[in-house]
Image (cartoon, helix red, strand yellow):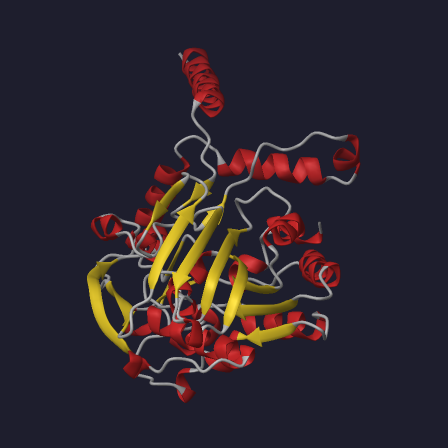
Length: 383
């Protein structure tokens, strides 16, 4: 009887292992995880140099982990079980005060981080005649750490921003988000970050726009120059999706519509389409409501803005970015005639060649700290 039971266990385990292995190879592979807000590991490139340096082994491990069959369902199940234990942390998300959810931020690999800083500096040195600005925004856990639950352990993001600022070449303008996203020096009643999502709010994006405009020598529009209205009050973002905390109050999303409107034509290279709105209202009825801004992530976009010639501050601007740029972009259309926007996570062309082909001399690198410390695609900036 015992032998029969043992055989059942062995064959059951082997069968499950075989089924999961088969599922791993036949199931489609996604490129981006909405739940985790990150690019998933691509199929590892097998070269001798990458084998020797151990990069191939690391990428293979990440690839298997990122594309494990039914990974999203496993994560959701783990969240449910942890909530039943009344934990304040689920899947790297803390449940903080005043309805805020926070992503756990750990000390980065500074050796790896230095490679990304070097790539930024290399980009600047490759374009000595261009004006390059680098804006690095903290996420909510960096600015609102006092709202974390008791004994929650996170690494201070300001140390990362300071580290990067100290090592960015002096000929590049560095805008540290801790300098302009300080609730103590702004209207504290207005949230700067969403409570359930990893992005800054439209008000936070406005503060960033104002800081960038001042750095560029432009006169930023005041809030009084906009009609500000809410487009949805039922936004449950990426932190909510990952943490799966119950009874979470949704966020609202605002739009700042200039009282002096600017006509915009936006070409989306991914789909070879041109649209005349910076917003896609269809996403307001979906889970990913932040994609209301420009219809979500695109590798490459080009915007042409019909600004009165006397009001033009800049002819062309290239933004190399993550998704924090999406809610800041509409503000920049009031100043720049032609805006090119590249998402470094998905654009596989040569950025330097693109600048030369389009005769672009002004660049804004815009990232949040959490993305920057772990985004290997930043190495594309070296070329």
